[in-house]
Amino acid sequence: MNQVVEVKNHKKMRVASFFTGIGGFDLGMERAGMEVVFQCEIDRFCQQILKRHWPQVPIYEDIRTLTSSTIPTAELWCAGWPCQDLSHANTNRQGLAGERSGLFYKFMELVGEVHPAWLVMENVPGLLSAEQGTALEAVIDTLEAHGYLGGWLSCNALHTGLPHNRDRVFFIASFGSKSVYQIFTDSSELSGDSPTGKSSGTETRSPICQSPVRDYPLVVQRRGGFGYTLARNICPTLRAQTGKHQGGHSDRPILCGEKLDLDRVGKADGVSPRLDGRRGRVLGNAVVPAIAEWIGRKILEI
Image 1 (tube, rainbow, N blue to C red):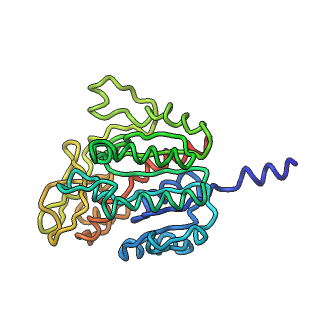
Image 2 (cartoon, rainbow, N blue to C red):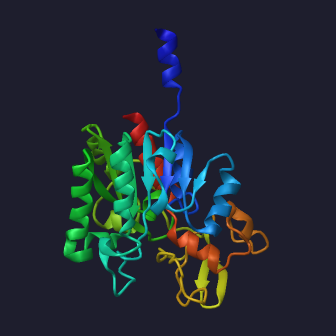
Image 3 (cartoon, one colour):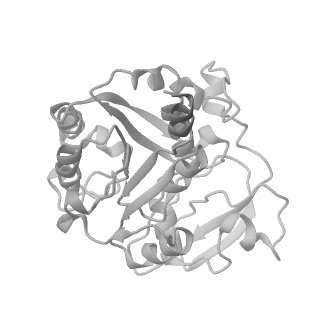
């Protein structure tokens, strides 16, 4: 009996990743101690990145034709489903009725056939106001209809110590279990030592919260390309550019935490020195791995 328990405790939780992008969820969950066993991503450029870093993990291209029998057994499913019809950047957003953001329902159709133990989903804050607030209600109602309990929280890249204002909404739910509520009790760990947190009297309760304003080198997104500068304050969100040009604004994501050195800065932390519009787009769509890791660790604790 002791041997059986020991083997079970050492078994990694398996993750199936949908709308994978460049693998922000996947990287975070792996850092938490989980194992990615399946990915679903339609973008060919993203597929190249995924195949490089997860060469053994099968990638299915189009969720619209995916069947549940194709998905390997996984205790946790994660999905950063398309945000285009929910984002405030879209003046004609159609909410969950839109062709792209409406793929949420296809994902939940698969969920309803399999019922994985855990769901973790991500989208933009525009979800909270889309369709006069009924889009958020629809997401929650759909989760409840399939037997999932949980909730949502807002997490910012600032909360991981990056000088990068990137607010996203995360849904965490468990099938037929109330244990997920412990995560929302602990979610204050993700608000901390940022200027916003200090001004509101929020105390830092976790090492995940660090001062995000330092002399960090930053990659600067401008019309016509990218350059480098030093951090002086909190940076706006890096946007996923869909036009023919590479920028048109001065959004600045964090690049790395060392002294600015233009000869080597493009090689730091995996950011390509050939940063271009394609790379800027996929970075703009990516989940912050540190937030995914925090969620993953909390799930494993439960």
